[in-house]
Image 1 (cartoon, rainbow, N blue to C red):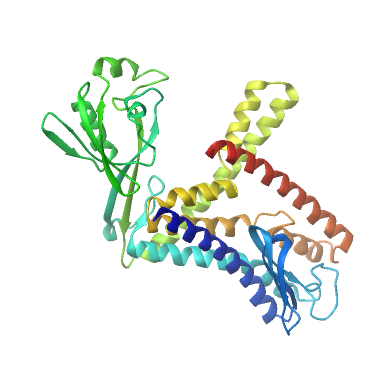
Image 2 (image 1 turned 90 degrees about the vertical axis):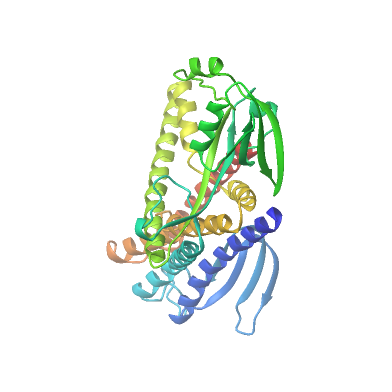
Length: 389
């Protein structure tokens, strides 16, 4: 099931790219701009077909995005049917069409999830208390302390904790508080921990740490637990009439968190650069860690989708909804290679300079931002590989 859900997640992610590019395509056509190519993935090209209309449909080897190539994309192009010759309003609609489609897709998915059961991903996740019903709770093992009872028993971070038994008593576990109370009560004893792994139940015999081992470490930099885990509590709640409001509320939270994450990443990058220039190794490492903890690329997406497959259909759909909203937000950033950056360039050239940018200037700006994006992409991929493998 995990493999099927992971494949479904990847297919839906590709669908997000298609939806984005379809937005550009349909709005361009409606505003008289000719579409020369609709491509899935990034070059080099693997397959192409030319339609009777003259438009080329292509599949490309790098499955990391897609593109719609319009006639005369340079702002200085004045040929009939070119993007450059379109009105300012038409260009604005075309540039923002992909972002709008990803935003709509994310909101539709979140609204649907709110009706059937939306997973809780963040603390204080938005909900309408009077129309909220918790429908599912489970506790994952999460982080495992080195040389702990949990590690010695062979527990995995993705294992779901079901119950813990000792001395003829069995305690069902659904929350982190349940786990804390049970391990404290059974401190130092041999317990039977029932877990679920890949849909199959297993029972582990584990001797918990004693209070004498745990209590002295509580106020230190390296506190120990009776079992030696930092569990992840997963829950899902359902709404009815408030489902669209829940979708909008969560979207607002995601936007704020994403902007904060970008700020921390840029701050960390600045600290890393300053530390490198000044020779301050501690500042460099701290800045590098702060920057890399805030970002993720294709490897991270793949790892999240794979992990999400073990948590069920709703979680996979939640990940896709978040990715859709994140794509919308990232594409409005003012980098010339992105939709938002292209729009900003156009608005400056038409509104401030009162003339279109030359083809050479526009290509230099887009090329420089593309090079920067590729370098960042390569660095993020390296970080992701180290993080997940």
